[in-house]
Image (cartoon, rainbow, N blue to C red; front, side, top):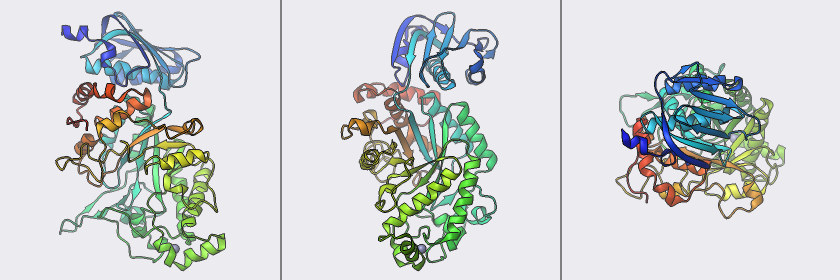
Length: 493
Ligand SMILES: [Zn+2]
């Protein structure tokens, strides 16, 4: 075990802290190690005791309050006799705990002495999990949340409604459970179905677990496209009245919400209010991507809506709907987020000022949204943020549609050179997205996520040179082994 003694904290931590000074010696974490905290950090100390397997009581590990550090900033001092984490906020204290956990995990409970001063670069450090195409258990979501928090991520974007399934319970609309929550698996001949709703208890459990780890949860309710599951449940919300099916195929479907239908708006008023109650954090993602306008062109109700609202093109109906749904989000005290297509067709209506735009079609949406004064989340599918894409351009690799190499992720920046300083100032951060059309199990999800999610975490916490990140791939694989994560170990490009 002498080798552990000689390892330095600076060789073991990922993301690499802003400032780290290695010192002589180490603190050995054991079952009798005690944890104490200043009053604001009692909750973090409880979490620490549970996660580190230590006891509350003495001051072997001390969470110490100080004034004047930034929101998520922490200081960590490890000596042979004590571990002291200093912060101003619970978030900062938690990040200090994550550093201690990582050292303990990767170095058999021996914490090399060091002094760290650290804080993240970007506020929004997230990942998205599509639980419509593949339904993930709460246990697996909790596993991912724990790992994400360990590497400094702080946003969980939970994709909960789509063509292939609706996952949020909505009281008073029984067909959501009876119809929208499951699809017939057409590749089988026996009529078997797939999927279900998450229960309210499960949704609360996921949030409590995330909040213990200082992660905000953002539910996504797709509008006005990607709604086949909802239309199957309530065909009157579509332009033709159906019949519609919860889809068991992948792609973009022409059947979307009928913009001329007031009953559909009534449903969303109720549904958004219920989602706003079920989810306690400040954001609701309203989708907005991949919405064809073919059905609207043929629909008398949609045409009447355009006439009444003074709209001259079908594409303006999407921004009309974005404004209506955003108003529902506002009415419930939340802030809306939309995929970058929400920028299209906005000449007549404009967009709500506080709408956060998530740029996925490359960086174009991010450039335009920031120019128009919107806050931006970057998750360009072109430069390493789409984790459903293959790791390599090879038929031997699993994945869908495209390629996101480790090299791309390792050098990713949410603020590319094409942005001027003003635009960069509107960028909150970035997200890695895992769509799950071709994901059949949690193990496959892990293989697609890791180590890409760890590399993204580094670039959002404390951006490094891509080559330096790639030199640490062995370390990332070691972390995955310790965390029981199935990960990609092939070439970086
Ligand atoms: Zn219509």
